[in-house]
Length: 139
Image (cartoon, rainbow, N blue to C red; front, top):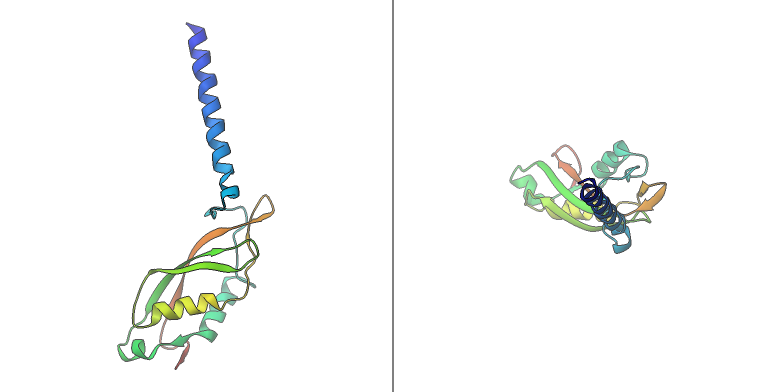
């Protein structure tokens, strides 16, 4: 009776190892990571990013007229070279704010990429742009 149990354990370990290899090979397929050893970051960190957003923001006239404020959540990929790609809004406010959030992210300088085992990787991220009337410039 011990032999079948041993065979079952060996088969189980082989399938777990094979599954881990498939997960590790995702990097060769090019899928971005969501969990990394060292997260990607804006040059100078999150406070510099907020400063950048405040200085570069052009508050849309339509949003000002309608008294709209809040957060637009943006999803993007930080590439291995630090550039941002696949920028898209995942939580909208409308009134021109979604387009402004995309414009802001598209105009950002290159980031420090995320890393796994000290090697740069593509990282999928979601962050927001806070729109408040006291920040930004009206057109």
